Image (cartoon, rainbow, N blue to C red; front, side):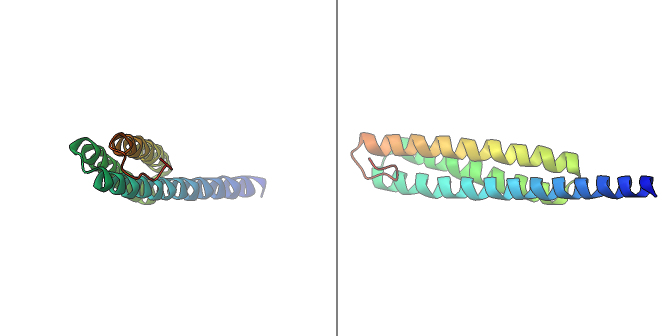
Length: 116
Protein backbone atom coordinates (compact mmCIF):
# COMPACT_ATOMS: atom_id res chain seq x y z
CA UNK A 1 0.00 0.00 0.00
CA UNK A 2 2.85 2.41 0.71
CA UNK A 3 4.24 2.04 -2.82
CA UNK A 4 0.82 2.86 -4.28
CA UNK A 5 0.61 6.00 -2.17
CA UNK A 6 4.11 7.01 -3.22
CA UNK A 7 3.26 6.47 -6.88
CA UNK A 8 0.06 8.46 -6.48
CA UNK A 9 1.96 11.30 -4.82
CA UNK A 10 4.54 11.24 -7.61
CA UNK A 11 1.81 11.35 -10.27
CA UNK A 12 0.13 14.26 -8.53
CA UNK A 13 3.46 16.07 -8.34
CA UNK A 14 3.97 15.66 -12.08
CA UNK A 15 0.45 16.89 -12.77
CA UNK A 16 0.98 19.97 -10.61
CA UNK A 17 4.29 20.69 -12.32
CA UNK A 18 2.63 20.46 -15.71
CA UNK A 19 -0.12 22.88 -14.65
CA UNK A 20 2.46 25.24 -13.21
CA UNK A 21 4.44 25.20 -16.47
CA UNK A 22 1.30 25.84 -18.49
CA UNK A 23 0.34 28.73 -16.20
CA UNK A 24 3.85 30.19 -16.34
CA UNK A 25 3.87 30.00 -20.14
CA UNK A 26 0.40 31.55 -20.42
CA UNK A 27 1.37 34.37 -18.06
CA UNK A 28 4.52 34.99 -20.08
CA UNK A 29 2.53 35.09 -23.31
CA UNK A 30 0.13 37.61 -21.78
CA UNK A 31 3.04 39.78 -20.58
CA UNK A 32 4.62 39.65 -24.04
CA UNK A 33 1.34 40.60 -25.72
CA UNK A 34 0.94 43.56 -23.37
CA UNK A 35 4.51 44.69 -24.04
CA UNK A 36 3.94 44.40 -27.79
CA UNK A 37 0.80 46.52 -27.55
CA UNK A 38 2.57 49.20 -25.56
CA UNK A 39 5.54 49.12 -27.94
CA UNK A 40 3.21 49.62 -30.89
CA UNK A 41 1.53 52.52 -29.12
CA UNK A 42 4.92 54.12 -28.49
CA UNK A 43 5.94 53.56 -32.12
CA UNK A 44 2.71 55.11 -33.36
CA UNK A 45 3.26 58.12 -31.10
CA UNK A 46 6.90 58.48 -32.17
CA UNK A 47 6.30 58.01 -35.87
CA UNK A 48 9.89 56.86 -36.41
CA UNK A 49 11.27 53.83 -38.18
CA UNK A 50 13.44 53.02 -35.15
CA UNK A 51 10.42 52.83 -32.85
CA UNK A 52 8.50 50.75 -35.40
CA UNK A 53 11.37 48.26 -35.68
CA UNK A 54 11.30 47.85 -31.90
CA UNK A 55 7.52 47.43 -31.93
CA UNK A 56 7.81 44.79 -34.66
CA UNK A 57 10.43 42.96 -32.57
CA UNK A 58 8.10 43.05 -29.58
CA UNK A 59 5.27 41.65 -31.70
CA UNK A 60 7.50 38.84 -32.97
CA UNK A 61 8.53 38.00 -29.41
CA UNK A 62 4.88 37.98 -28.34
CA UNK A 63 4.04 35.59 -31.18
CA UNK A 64 6.91 33.34 -30.09
CA UNK A 65 5.70 33.39 -26.49
CA UNK A 66 2.18 32.45 -27.59
CA UNK A 67 3.56 29.56 -29.65
CA UNK A 68 5.63 28.39 -26.71
CA UNK A 69 2.62 28.63 -24.40
CA UNK A 70 0.73 26.35 -26.79
CA UNK A 71 3.66 23.92 -26.72
CA UNK A 72 3.67 23.97 -22.91
CA UNK A 73 0.00 23.04 -22.90
CA UNK A 74 0.49 20.06 -25.17
CA UNK A 75 3.87 18.60 -24.31
CA UNK A 76 5.35 16.25 -21.77
CA UNK A 77 6.54 17.63 -18.44
CA UNK A 78 10.06 18.19 -19.74
CA UNK A 79 8.79 19.76 -22.97
CA UNK A 80 6.34 21.93 -21.02
CA UNK A 81 9.09 23.10 -18.69
CA UNK A 82 11.33 23.97 -21.63
CA UNK A 83 8.48 25.73 -23.42
CA UNK A 84 7.58 27.70 -20.30
CA UNK A 85 11.19 28.83 -19.94
CA UNK A 86 11.30 29.81 -23.62
CA UNK A 87 8.03 31.74 -23.26
CA UNK A 88 9.51 33.64 -20.32
CA UNK A 89 12.57 34.51 -22.41
CA UNK A 90 10.32 35.71 -25.23
CA UNK A 91 8.36 37.86 -22.78
CA UNK A 92 11.65 39.38 -21.59
CA UNK A 93 12.61 40.09 -25.22
CA UNK A 94 9.23 41.73 -25.84
CA UNK A 95 9.67 43.93 -22.77
CA UNK A 96 13.16 44.95 -23.91
CA UNK A 97 11.79 45.82 -27.34
CA UNK A 98 9.02 47.80 -25.66
CA UNK A 99 11.68 49.75 -23.75
CA UNK A 100 13.49 50.46 -27.01
CA UNK A 101 10.30 51.72 -28.67
CA UNK A 102 9.54 53.93 -25.69
CA UNK A 103 13.09 55.30 -25.69
CA UNK A 104 12.73 56.11 -29.39
CA UNK A 105 9.41 57.81 -28.68
CA UNK A 106 10.90 59.77 -25.79
CA UNK A 107 13.70 60.95 -28.07
CA UNK A 108 11.07 62.60 -30.27
CA UNK A 109 9.23 64.00 -27.24
CA UNK A 110 6.27 61.77 -28.10
CA UNK A 111 4.13 60.46 -25.24
CA UNK A 112 5.14 57.04 -23.89
CA UNK A 113 3.68 54.47 -21.55
CA UNK A 114 6.48 54.82 -19.02
CA UNK A 115 5.58 58.28 -17.82
CA UNK A 116 7.96 60.26 -20.02
